[in-house]
Length: 340
Ligand code: WQD
Image 1 (cartoon, rainbow, N blue to C red):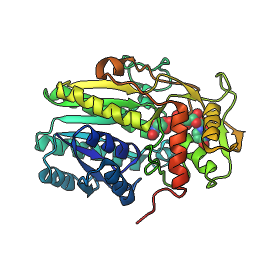
Image 2 (tube, rainbow, N blue to C red):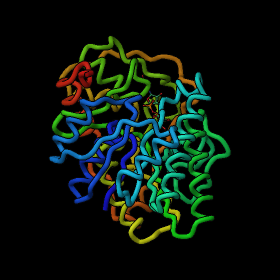
Image 3 (cartoon, protein in one colour):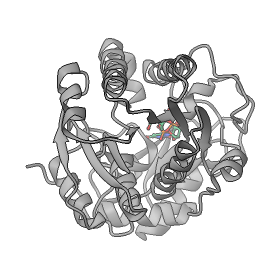
Image 4 (tube, rainbow, N blue to C red):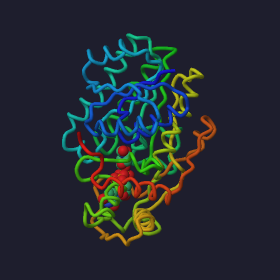
């Protein structure tokens, strides 16, 4: 079975490529390097032990995407490619709608014209929206709108896929709703490598630990949570990657539409994460409390029962291992991947 991994040079995509190869799949990686680079491809090939084919491509280009499917015999697509910075999406919404929606529609058209019927989508817990009861459960209807254009693209793509499954019996769409991916491959060779100043907590903390940034700013310590800081369901990126391999089982069962959370089922506070990272790097990290960040929810985490029941998948790695693995990646690569 050959899997096209779009965004496969990126953070979650590269870790998933390694697990797919380990599980015996052939892969083809497509990426436009908007948020990754060739060094990430080289290192992923080395860790996977396979010189898998790589295509640099803008998936919003319909013709180029059709040609990709002419060139390779694809059996399934795992679609990671997309812009994903919540804050940035609020500043350039049209770029996010064009990029994330056009690339997905272009992929689905190419799949249709090449009779490829299997699609796994990198969705997000953000689709549950601010009203959903915690822990988030797949039976909860998705929100009418999310807190950002980024989140709205995830919501819209879920609707596109649900409609495509309804109209095309035999088309399988697996929607995997991620919580907060963190961590890195145990080798320290690949990891999260955000462009510019990180929006997300973990890469920001890691860059303070390695001296690239000077102070952690904790957005709000007056929430109604045990220590006043927000709770999130942080999941190790390798556990997340294994969840995608497990999801292929549903594809083989011709599942039609299948929706599933990928989370640990536990909430960890910002302060707890900072303290765990201090333990990993062996130094007290400087932090200060700052005003709340607009759009942040106080606390949410997954109900992971459905993934366990349906996929036989459970997240195994804990917070300390997540921090240890990020520290190994960041301390070995203080400036991230070397650019070609
Ligand atoms: C986590 C907590 C912040 C940075 C987003 C997207 C989600 C997914 C993951 C993309 C919050 C606090 C953060 C900092 C801080 N998307 N924080 N100081 O917002 O839960 O989820 O990223 O991959 O779809 O919504 O993640 O890491 O940005 O924030 O105090 O410098 O850390 O307030 O409570 P978030 P995050």
